[in-house]
Amino acid sequence: MLISVIIPVFNVSGYLARCVESVCNQTYKDIEIILVDDGSTDNSLDICNQMQKKYSTIRVFHKENGGLSSARNMGLDNARGEYICFIDSDDWIEPDFCSYLVDMATGFDSKLSICSISKDSTKTEIIAYHEEKCISQIEALHFLDTRESMEYLCTVISCNKLYHKSLFKDIRYPDNKWHEDEFVIVPVLLQSAKICITDRPMYHYVCREDSITGESARTDIRHLDVIDAYENRMCSLSEYGDLFCIAWRNCMLCIIEYIEKGNFDKHVILNLKKRYRNIFLKYKNIPVRYKVKYGLYLIFPRLYKAVFYIRNI
Image 1 (cartoon, rainbow, N blue to C red):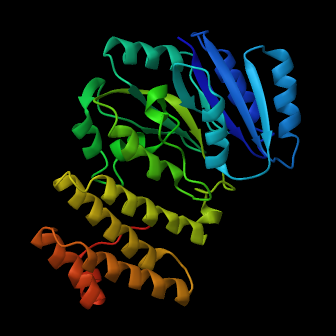
Image 2 (cartoon, helix red, strand yellow):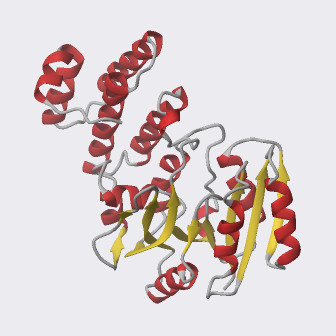
Image 3 (spheres, rainbow, N blue to C red):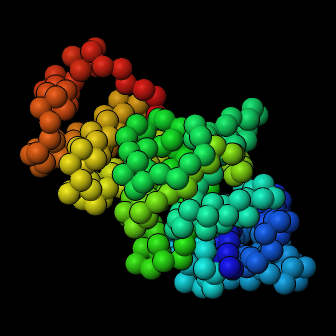
């Protein structure tokens, strides 16, 4: 079964060769590698072309810069594989990444298999599930309950997964949005009856200061796109009772954290407060305990802050 490995590329000349070599050196050999150059201004495209000459499994596409989502979508539109996975071009994978995930997927007749993550920086941090097993759709959705948990991070990230191609039949990443993974994960899970997870950290996420998750990007207003993702999640889960309420709670928490810790200007903060109020008032079927807690922030924000811990973002 052919696996299409989609690698969006943008100005990563110092990382790209290691990423691509880690895919070319997979123990699983039925692979095509789709490199999508997203208008790089360094020599990343040259490296793509050189590697295409070296490896017959590589196909290179070039496009004007449109962002990570548009590059992934071009890869999806051109993928030939029965299975799909995404690798960010500054990251890399263990040699048995593909074979292990495809064995889990086929062994449990699952459309989605997920591995744990090694976060590589000055100090390695393992972000892992607690065990290896096959779980239900509802169990997987509940991994999104607590935003700072390891299960949340493993579940929401796009790149540590093997997807059956059918999961993306009607799904594409949102153009011109940051936090694109947050938009896609719930629609994908809602099409997956069973999900395989493992505690093995086979995906290496490389921390870079100049990435959108790096320290230098913390005050970028585009981070607020994640609020749109939470509202989309609430719509997707509107018929799922407690899962919808948890999504509503997480949306409230996210806005509070950006108001209190985001270091945005007064105009942005004012708009965030208005958005908080609108979302709070819009949805009626919310448990009283949530309405009381987050209504307190709406009316008496200083008292809320005195009572409840606000984590750094």
